Amino acid sequence: MPGNGQPHGDTTAPSHERLLTYVRRWAIGGVLLLGAAAVFEFALSWRVPSALFYVLSSLTVPFNAVTVTCWGCLHFDLRPS
View 1 (tube, one colour):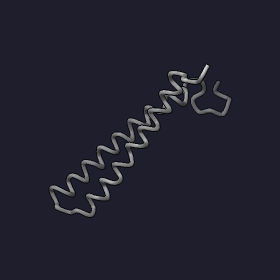
View 2: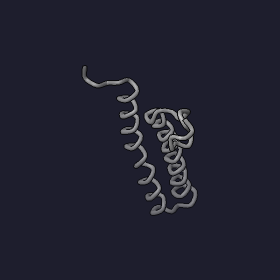
View 3: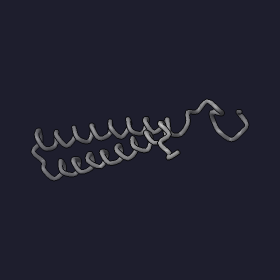
View 4: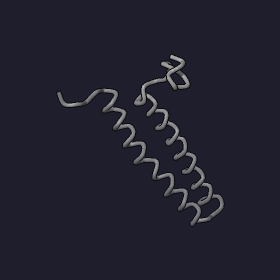
């Protein structure tokens, strides 16, 4: 309904369906950070900035693991009967 305070009414996806969008965004960000780290380390031989980018890219892995686990529990309804 357009007047219920939500900008899109009833056309938005359930919140657990949007979790995969966040996983995709964080995965792309992690790959970009990993690529930047490789450029700093191998092409420019700058070890400290590459270490920073490696650490930042490694933080995307636990985020995606937790998010995919939560999505699986919500999507497949794994509550005890």
